[in-house]
Image (cartoon, rainbow, N blue to C red; front, side, top):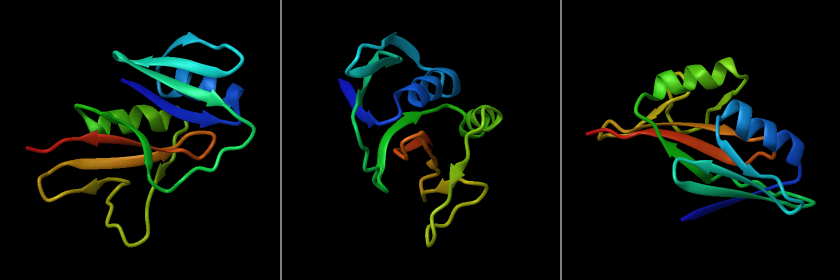
Length: 118
């Protein structure tokens, strides 16, 4: 599988995904930033304009949500809260114990961290 996003801010996106999120850079050709997240390739297409939505564009399954959030906060990430969607400390909890936290990349793409419940 290959995941795709877009960026109109490739310099900021390169630094964000490499230095903040911690992805491995594969290449930075003129048309896309290419990263690896585990075995999944993420291609961030370089475009003139990005229209970021309010739905999650890309997310990660993490074993310890709070620890990962703390790491990202130390690197300057602000987590997103949504009106009418109950969250505590930036975390939404489902009935099965699954917990999700959201944040945005430099272009406003909505990203998530999920720790699945039992």
